[in-house]
Figure 1 (cartoon, one colour):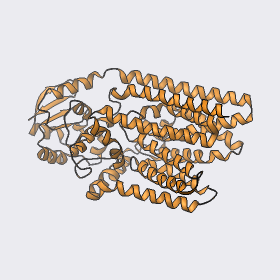
Figure 2 (figure 1 turned 90 degrees about the vertical axis):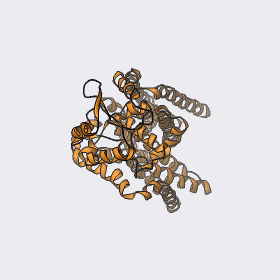
Figure 3 (figure 1 turned 60 degrees about the vertical axis):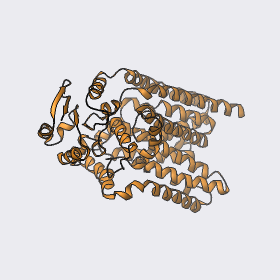
Figure 4 (figure 1 turned 180 degrees about the vertical axis):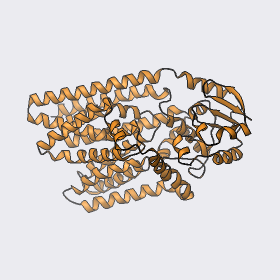
Length: 463
């Protein structure tokens, strides 16, 4: 037993190290999402002392910035921010292993880790500057802490429950969809054989402590925070309103289907065998699926919300197949390895694309660097190129997404106020987002003149 334990533990550790090494290669890769440029410029603004919400426009809760700002202050680069995301996702991976072992034994921990690290969306989100990966990682840590709490005694039990609430609150404070982890945590606590009320009370106290920390930047500018955190998402959802069919189409993306099918199969097998270990991960998967189907506007990276619960369901399924007999176990092992192989193939393809040079952004970056002085402010809808050129965008307009423009949260008046306040000298209009601001073209020609046409819609304007 101890030899099997050591073998699976070392195997899980080896898998995690492999995950870390392959992800580390991606830290200096090309931009992988528009959000990365926005967040990079947001951290630049925060690092130079601009306050969140009252000055820096932020549609993500403060926890995301709390978690990653220290990394940026140590090394001012996109790679350092991605490294912070990676470390958080590694913590989520460790929590997945703990949950897998507690639910399905030592082999279950290994299976859960294998399925998580090769999940294309988890692999993608582990080195991209977005809030989804860190929020999910903290959610998984919170669930693991809850599982450990019900299995310990005395002060350690209470301390773990407090940490559960704290981790859950920071997951929600990183991205709001972290709240879905409250369901598996509630199932764990209310399923405890004793001391349920004490566990819940301790978790609530931990959550309250986390909330107080998260509210610090909100207290100074509650109206701006409400507009940026709540109104921006509500209006974006109202304007998108593609319906459940579009969300379902994302869930059915071909490279996600193997893990989804394996998780479903594992859940059905465990239910047929009346294995109570399936209850928590199944409820977690169901509530995550409901959240994804109801979320608007939905993007493929939101599917990362399903990864830990599906990985755990797969682990529970393998454990039950092992209990049936050798043929069932061999079949389950083949299905797991097939799912892993699909994930590795997709991840490899993405790595090849990401490590290829991005000629357009390289040209945009060089053009920005060639104009003006390092301390000049810029307006741009290509925040990545401006940040890569070591130039700043004013905090109020770091995000020029079309959703904000359609929602009325980015207007010509906003640009004009910011121009005057920051004495903005340059404009890089690249991908059409600025052009979609009503009246932008007339406004930019009234205050700036074209300096360089960079091909296509890309133009640099100067004073």
